[in-house]
Image (cartoon, rainbow, N blue to C red):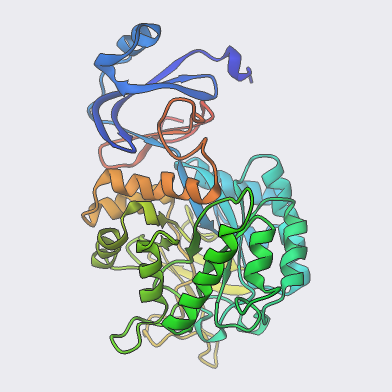
Length: 425
């Protein structure tokens, strides 16, 4: 492959989605691995006008920034928690890359400490190679009462030494860890898990919690305090892991984690993840969150597992057996009934099967403006990563560009200017 300096200038033209709006006939000029210019096609500067004029107007195309998924357990038949080698994990990352997710954070699930350390080391190799944008651990310091599709027997009390060991194995690539703030040792002061995470350059993500609103408020406050004192911090805000899912429900006499997280997001202290794939959340719930806190405090995620991009069937999510029926992943119910969530349709929802562009399409279909949906799927999560070179169609950023049809289905995907996927890829 030729290097970036030798690549010809490329123009993507269509309805360009920028952080400030939609350019009806816009152009994105890509020079090597970087975006050189973005604007209305009619306003192209002399340096790029010939290239823009040579590219036909495409009112039937959307041009989006490459999407950024902060919570992804796998795809293409491979789960990150089950990958033994970097090559296996790479296959999962590339499944999402081909469909428009140009930056993916690989997520693990609760497991014994030795397993987590080995899995983290495998993913660190992939992060070193630039194939993933970082590592997220969903556990093990979670509430067994809100375990969801995770093994409650492997959940632990807070252990700052384990956090430091995981961070060492991650070699600077640990982005977030999901924690339940009410669990002892997580956020109760001193050398707790929250302090150890921030010291390692990672962020606490509050979730899988049965805590009260007061306990979650206190945990978020602890995160705010530690992040505010951290030099060279990744982000100024902690996150909430898939808001609503894996949490005590919001009740008017027991507001619980959901109310606490929404209030913190509105105050600018938190970014809330939403698995807005049409299965995890109702459309009205999604619209309400966007109305309450705005797209700058929402990160759309997939929570995808191995079945993303695959047919219905049986899969694994770490140690848990999962069955996918009609595109919905649920824990398989054991003979003793364990895993049954009382829905009559099998066990707990066990992650997602969508790509992030599918989530964007679902959110737009729910009535959220496309600019807001794209911001929540690209710009805001890039801010969580602390990556100013990703997440928006702006000159100087890495040329991660997704071209879709009118229905927001992928036509062409570029990462650092190189075509890597889409229907025409």
